[in-house]
Length: 98
Image (cartoon, rainbow, N blue to C red; front, top):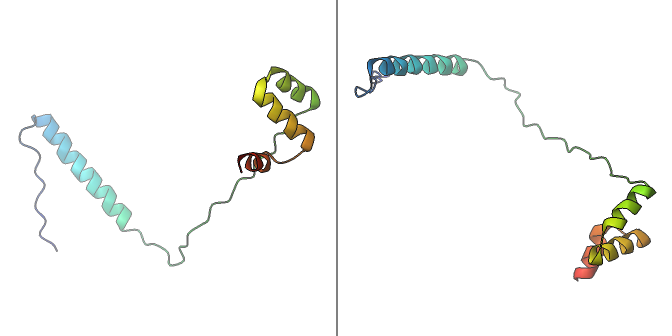
């Protein structure tokens, strides 16, 4: 056995606070000893998280018209160009930036 120093509560605290400290110490030490005493299996392996597939956001023609009616300026121009060409947004942005 190891020679552990005996737990002593803080003497500057009031009596009830010292009692709480002692009870908390013994509670956590008991919980930790219960947890550490459990055997761990030999076949533990990391599990890779699965990527969640997000459903595509599909809008109907009336919904698209409502959105376009609320747009102005450059945003409207970009949206019309994208809708006419049917090109992926990221591809269009790359071609404009480059």
